[in-house]
Image 1 (cartoon, rainbow, N blue to C red):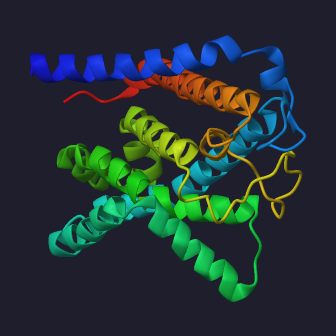
Image 2: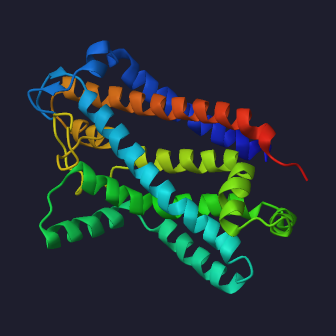
Image 3: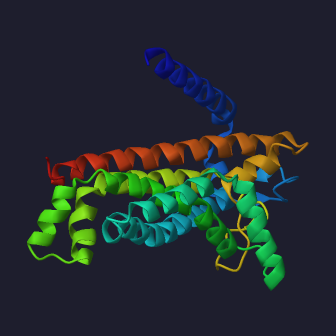
Amino acid sequence: MFLSSLLIIVVLGIILFSVLKKGMPFLTWEMISQPPRGGFYFGKEGGILNAIIGSLYLAFGATTLALCIGLPVAFYLNIYLIHKKKLVNTVRFFLDLLWGVPSIVYGAFGFMIMIYFGFKSSLLAGIIVVTIFILPIMIRALDEALKSVPIGLFESSLSLGATTSEISFSIYARQCFPCIITAILLSFGRAIGDAAAVLFTAGFTDHIPTSFTQPTATLPLAIFFQLSSPIPQVRQRAYAAAVILTFIILIISIITRIIVKKYQRSIIKF
């Protein structure tokens, strides 16, 4: 266990060191506060503000939508179907299969649907596809959290006259609130860091989207496209984008830890 933990820490340290070494020298205020000028592939000036805003739009939208769908499904599996183990295990099996499907498959599926209905690449299309991609992750993470709630809490709530809806949103949600935050963080990290799912659906642009029907740039796609540019200044923007993406995940993780620690005391101890 010690060697495995040490190996993970070393690999993580190497990744962080490589990203920071390549990107920190080029991380300037201009890089953060301005969109690229002259084209994201050939333009030597400007920054990656469009990709930062686009990534936040897409990740927050997809995570919110996945939570609105996934939380009721997780409640339904663990409260309404609490005595139907075979059905619940079957649903969990299919969710695990969907979790293992590569994100490029979701992107290709979304692209085929867009072609069939004549839709163009847009922020909304990217949010929908990423939501479908992270939904199994969200549901299974919430499901594992709700599974840890003792059956005695459910039975005692019923004996006091609570309805299943009250048990779900007033008791189970409060008992598992730190785990729900962790599930949100896990889903948000997958949403903001994936490039394959939005490659064909969200598109790419040098501008910040002002509506759901416009294409949007994301940090992973900015890194992917700009690293292949023959212009050194453009490749520098890609390294800076990698640093910013790392910092966003770090900030979200710290905020999550603070929230979890704050609400840990509200959990009923058994």
